[in-house]
Amino acid sequence: MQNEERKGCLSGIIPTLGYLCMLGITLLIGIWWKDDFIAMLITGLFFWIWIPLGVGAVITFGLSMSLKTRHHKILLGLGIFNLLFLAAYFLYKSPQQDCSADIMAEHYERTKQGLRELEDYAREALDTGAYIHLEFDGKHISIFHVKAHNDSIGSSNWDADHQKDSLQAVVGLTTDELNSLRKRLSDLGCISVELQQDAPGITIGFRRVGLGMYFFRLYDHPLSTQQWQSAMDDEALVPYDHYTVFGYGAGAIGSTTFPGKDDYLQRKGKGPR
Image (cartoon, rainbow, N blue to C red; front, top):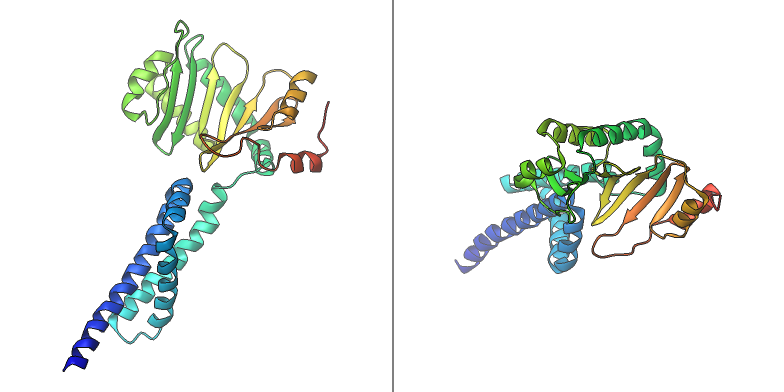
């Protein structure tokens, strides 16, 4: 009688552990899909949880192939889903969470006309002398820094969806113009724009990797010898051509050096003008 009770108890516990392992891995992949920086923190802080869950998920997947019970079939389905989810992450999402000077160069050559058109549109949309730094995360406005021409101090705003109407008014943006900037950036595969309306040049954010931001800095006039050398000497900048510099900002933490800068410049034979 006691043996039967133990078997019944184990038969209930084992599938439950299998579900916990499978669903835990599904959750982890989902976190990586949503935000790689947060995912790195969660994975690192709770590795002592994720490693047993991963091992348990692999064992559960192997055992579920016997298809002896309804639980086996469900767990096998969850395992297949996790494999497909993981494959989709590496094929689709992971490349978007990586960047380099080579990736930026290829993207710039495909979109440089559109980037210049974006600059013209943004400059025309803003009030004279206004400053804007606008970043989108999908439909969410993650950064909306503004400064009117006559203001001595600007207004810095994060997670600004609920403030957008008042911030638009500061720099003269209409809702249609804000939505157009969002769409133009999305169509160009970029996420942010930073512009002083009455000053030459524009900074266009290309991609975030963790907290770091890769960006294009476009100039209206050819870089002078001094500007070129200054970009060469700056660890965060990579001069691409006479009108364009690639940049990297590390955010609150991390190295301020553009990853792979020296290797890229050496391969491309770029040096002092």
